[in-house]
Amino acid sequence: MIERLLPNRVRRTYLGGGRIDGFTGVIADCSDGVPRPEDWLASTVTAFNGTEEIEGEGLGRMEDGRLVRDVIGDLPFLVKLLDSDEQLVIQVHPTVPCAKRLFGSPVGKTECWYFLPGTAPDACVYLGFKPGVTREKWRTAFETQRGLLDMLHRIPVAPGDFVFVDGGVPHAIGGGCFMVELQEPSDLMVVAERITPSGRRIPDAKMHGGVGWGRMFDVYEYEALEYEEVCRRHVRRAFGRKGIKEEDVRETSCLCGPEFTGKFSMWRIEGKGRLGLPRPACVIVTDGAGAVNGLVAKKGDRLLVAREKNIETDGSASLVVCA
Image 1 (cartoon, one colour):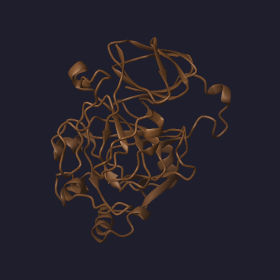
Image 2 (tube, helix red, strand yellow):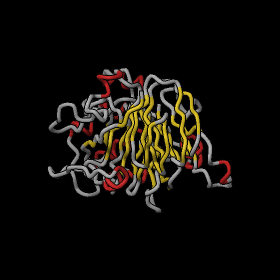
Image 3 (cartoon, helix red, strand yellow):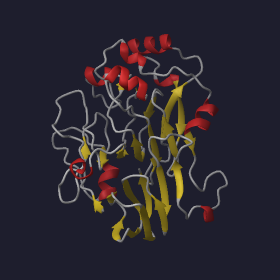
Image 4 (cartoon, helix red, strand yellow):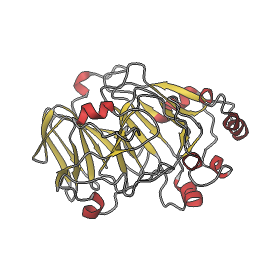
């Protein structure tokens, strides 16, 4: 089974979404004044905004309107398109043991990011504590709301770059980032900053994630690393950078495999290719056009592939496959 997915824009507190509008050709309805800078693909997870919740928000639908989870059950991952016009507030997600202990959830929220064309030339992310940061210093900075961003490493990113973010690692996505985000299937987080750069206040429930002001600091892993070590553990630069030849690009390549995590996987396919699938997969056509398991697809299409053992592509399309 391979089917197209409907747009599934989700409310967040940060500004963005225009790149998703242009990429998919569908403009999000933000008439209520709330930004919708994310599109949750094939999602079987509901969103949590810490304010007035919308029943079923975040659940993905097939092109015919059926809920994905009604067709194939719960997926063990969540895929998003994310577009930031401003820096996201600093946040951290739980590891599996932390999620079980504090949130009563069987899954945490380890995640990874693949940056798409359209990412701004000066885009960056903030990731990991700098040397010298301790729990006590971080809590003091939180209480005063001063110097928080200075305690994290600033890492420039460009289209084709890949960043892996373990549960427990503090991070913030910078403005101008357009990405595919793949993660564990949850919306669990705690947030360190009370006000977004554009002046929106984060609801208290969103900040402490429901675990309370004291226990929220248990979600962080207080490992303070040098910049080079953070990059070595978490960042893979784009094909075509750092001396990788063009002829090495047009192939099926693994972006996120067991060297990072066993929770999910991400691949990139350029042109004609074949890929074995361990489970249902979500496919994003990032450029060009071609056929995916016989279905004609073009840039901006989002597809669900289920109950098939392989993905086979033909044509000039560039794909990101998440499973």
